[in-house]
Image (tube, rainbow, N blue to C red; front, top):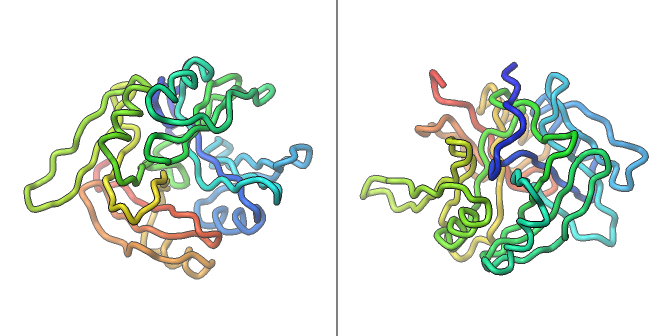
Length: 257
């Protein structure tokens, strides 16, 4: 298994988690679908459950108390200093939602929204760096922002995270605007320009061995298919809503990758 290079570079997506009202249902859906394992921590108020593949951490699933707002899939960008980065957010048009907090013995984090309203996290690694495994089934394959103002969002993340922003070149007949965020010399996340009817949000792509088989298994387990499986230059992909209504995609790499 190709363990990821640690620590994650500044500006890279380094962790993914969700805290919702029905943790058991979420775990019973994603664990067999993605090959995850990991039990809830009974001593944690949020019963946080680090999910692993082959013993390596790939995601977190927690339980949100009834009086707290739910937190769909949220990606965390690696930053050298959470508090210093947070102080720049409002000047760039975003909003700090949860100021820097320590996760004792693990690291430090904060939550914010970008100028278009999409939620994201920041992670200052302590003993726990974030993803311990990449490029394997069950791991995050890609992370993508869907927003009605892609240019503003891409500029925001570029300035905040000190990452390179590249606008994707598309054929004239393709009416799509897309930007990629590059950290450590590699593309780490994307920004997709969507219509105004779509609430801005980040969505994860998970790598699977067989997209069509995974779609069938997901739908049988209560998911709803919203984008049928299709081949793209970046692999075969499909889009779904999990049983709690969270959007995600599944993908297999193109041949030779």
